[in-house]
Amino acid sequence: MTQRISFSLDATDGKARTGVISTPRGDIRTPAFMPVGTAGTVKAMMPESVRATGADILLGNTYHLMLRPTAERIDRLGGLHKFMNWERPILTDSGGFQVMSLAGLRKLTEEGVTFASHVDGSKHVITPERSMEIQKLLGSDIVMCFDECPALPATEEDVAKSMRMSMRWAQRSRDAFGDRPGHALFGIMQGGVTQELREESSQALTDIGFDGYAVGGLAVGEGQEAMFGVLDYAPDYLPQDKPRYLMGVGKPDDIVGAVKRGIDMMDCVLPSRSGRNGQVFTRHGAINIKNARHADDPRPLDENCTCPACSQYSRAYLHHVFRSHEMISGMLLTWHNLHYFQEIMQGMRDAIAAGTFAAWEADFHAVRAAGDIEPL
Ligand SMILES: [Zn+2]
Image (cartoon, rainbow, N blue to C red; front, side):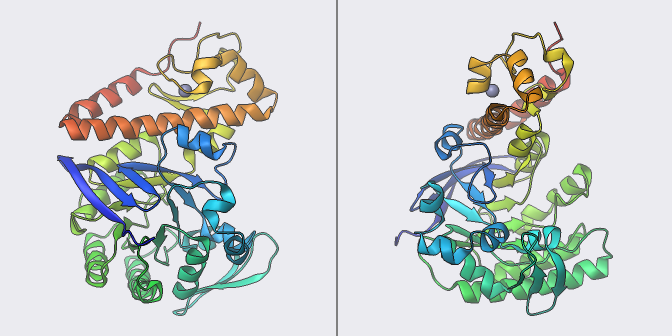
């Protein structure tokens, strides 16, 4: 693979952007939503079904894969694409965030993080260099810098200290990544909710130079208002001609608000995890399929949705299989949720290209505000 990953910005509407990230494994239409394939699978979905929802790219979690089955084993078996039967692009996170949220007995130093596996207690070390090595072994198309995201609440001083270490780690990640045609390395902006720190972090990253830039340290419990507050200015510090990725977002209205503010890529476990928990997202807002009101309802979740759950099954059936703990429940509801999230992305891409994003957004909010269809 010698083709370099490139980004073409095709249209803008306000701050919202649409374009294409071209990779040797296929194009990624932006704004893009990436389903999360935590441990080598988007839970409850076959890879071809994930593709059928409209996903161009998946996210894989370095932390989970390095512990089980290990990056070295995946490499021996031909890399993550072959291992999980997904030939299109894969973005891997750096492992840093999940070390902080899942692992035990963490010790953080300038060198990196030492931690105990949540699977078997075994001891591991991730440094920027090791994170680059693991993501290379996995065969990731878009590699993320190893960074640290301070636990909230944190003082501005702690956020600044952490951000500056992440910037030194970004340089080490860049050096360790080297030159790998066909693969991209993204830097991650930190700085909490402080504008000066976000600006300093963006400057440090653009001085190093990356193929794309993530806005990190958001969607960690600060709330939508605080997140949008940062997104009102943070994307403006990043280069126009590179993709911008908001990590770990989010609910449908978070996604729309982020794209409106200039974000090109997002990922979240929400559509898949919620699907397994009986939580459904439609144009009309959220539905809990567990509720008794659906037990006798022969209508689909959303009469306009073309996914298998909506085109072939009733609310009554989906309610029954959820209550009965049948596996098809998680399968169908995950499919619907992923389909709906991709429909939002397609709607936004079309609206930005047509210069009608504001009207699209107004309609999105109006239909949601009207709520779910009346019970029978
Ligand atoms: Zn559907």
